[in-house]
Length: 202
Length: 415
Image 1: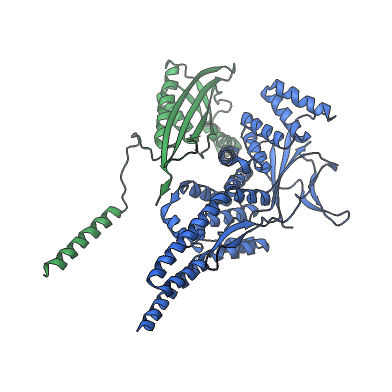
Image 2: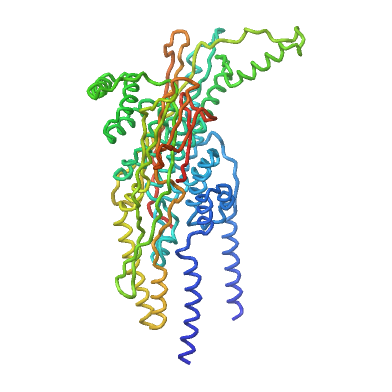
């Protein structure tokens, strides 16, 4: 007779332990190159895909000879309905171009700091022999700029248990010749994804 | 013995009734307090009351972010206001589903037991205020993101939201500030059709049509201006954008319908007092300006928004009344006294959901004033009933936020 309460107690203990273990917060390392999507919207994996595709094609645009074109990046405009920091995309593309060794990149973000440092050096605090030479900055041969756009299409209102949404992203990137104004290179990446969310939940 | 049993049941039921009455139908008191402080002119005290979200129930979290976001906006703290309003928008998007647990609660109590979902118009105005914030912060790209979100909202409930001219003008302006001229042109054109082509808007459209190379549109607009005898203006270089908010949005009240002496149905309703959109005059260097002025009456819009979902609200109230009747009848079959007490409880619990975003103004106006030079002196005034005395709204120049060619000014008029 005394076996029954004991087995009940053990069962409850096992059950509660299982529940506690399952409910515990966990942290795991994720491979940044792996593709992970929690919903249909833009995420880290999309950024990787966009950067890999565009930077590879852009690197192959020049032949890698000694004449390395000078490029200035004017960023990527965000024309989606999400607050996406497109600076992450342009930074990564810039990084890929620098690492390829086929381009020279102008650091536009540091211009005011360079001017400040230059003024400081010319002010007399730095010996003439150690001062940087003025008027030696590179002029850009090309402007790199692009636009990220999205189209969101929702399923028509009807009797249904799930709401479906189709999200289409496209990123256009262009390299414009600063002397002629001509677009010397252009490419785009497209990503389309469908999301289904239940209308009824707990 | 029977008497004792009834007494125990009564005590038990009272123990259920009292907390239920206290919990149901009560909005978080901190929200009431903060709103009162805000409308009495003490924004700092209102923000102190709403210092932490733990002062509100989980059902009222959205209202917490909305009220706090708007108070911060009116105080000129656009960065913090943006954080609050973005949280509200995200929460509403994440919880856009029918919760079974909430529906069960609301069927036996009232709609206060559910998370506040926001009226369609309120959902749109979250994006409107975010657009104003991002423009003030010099982030036109982010304002354009909110403009697209606002358009999604308008598309979903266009019967009501198409009438919000202020938000439409703000959407167009956000696109324009972000350099997305094609999108801006589309929205300005929709606004022109809705407002019967006011000359100031036609001037703006003409400049944009020329810029975008829409020759046939430009010809049509030019003809319209010519036939009205209006001289075509050169596109302005810099412009002052003045957002004027005035008055206080009407509050929801509870309407009651007695179906019998034991059952009542409560539904939310608005009483919209007659109120003219405040006339606003603008002068540039002392000369009256025929500037673009677009206004919305938020009171009428929110009333229309509630009417739009009136059928659903009524249907749910009827289902709730039937559910409560069934439960009370079932209990009364077993114990008549307990059944009557439950019926009394349900009767008392029947309360319309009168929650709303109450720090909103009654009217929102967007003024667009061309600036002939950087040192142009402009004044925006509101004519009053006192003869010859106009109340100043804005006197420029003063310190402002600037994005591209636009200088932004925000004013909340309290009376």
